[in-house]
Image (tube, rainbow, N blue to C red; front, side, top):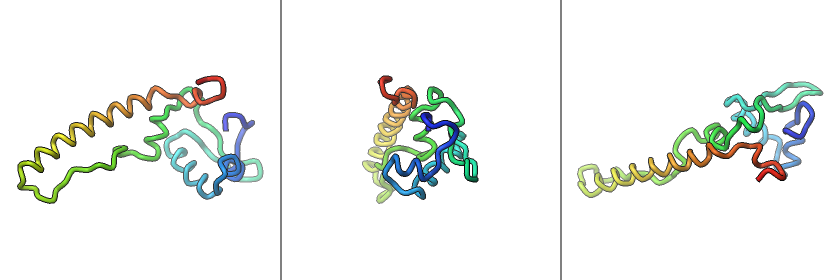
Length: 120
């Protein structure tokens, strides 16, 4: 969208991404809720960026879609009275928290302008 003058329609974006406009509208809806894009209806309408690319990080985008943990590994509660299970859950929870913090820190350092040709 940063290359378009003004706005880009869901159909235009879908053609660029080789996907369906409905998929684009769902994605853009999440980004709109995050305040990163806006949309206008009508013949000259479409999607437009609300912030410069250098102000939007991968972390912003990630959180717009996945507000929870990036990890699908979960602790077990099959045997809550088992001391080994409780101990393993504590260790796993700590490791997942540390990994999530590192993951988010890495994402926060990548801005969308770095993806432009010649930038990275």
